[in-house]
Image 1 (cartoon, one colour):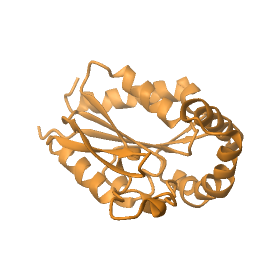
Image 2 (tube, rainbow, N blue to C red):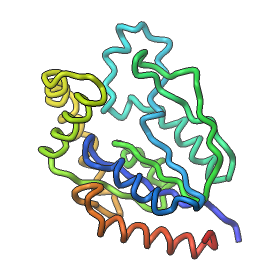
Image 3 (tube, rainbow, N blue to C red):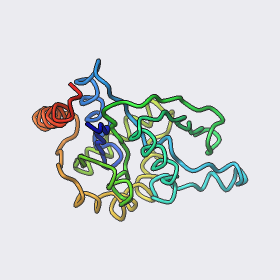
Length: 211
């Protein structure tokens, strides 16, 4: 049998709970052959730009991502070839010189706000999830995260949300919901949806003789 890894795409807005869903699925298969690829690691290299220009980067826009490299890496993993995943330095607003060596696995979870936006990426996925959470919950989660974990002020988080995050969500992220095979309401707290996904993944793995 010609084995090929299973690719699961998990998309959703900032603060939707997509990372929680991804981690829940990952934890259920811990001990099996599974890995996570975060789209956030694939922001474009900006070393050719002055620092002042890098500060203007809109991280919620599709053009911020180096999808060509991400697709190249997924294709390598599908052939059971290892990759060196890039690391992004948010303090310098460009790609770090550091890389993370990743060995291929039987299940690949690809997570990020815009993983369903690029048709080339969608075509590599076996299952496409969209984590759908109300805007009020998303902004509250973002406030807690950015203030507690990133040292941001409430005013700066709200200003960024209103001026960048919300319009980008409405223009680019929310429309990708139509490409999803499964829509998961309320993110990581939707244990029924997560259980269904785990069962589906197990079925696919068994069919491919991975388990």
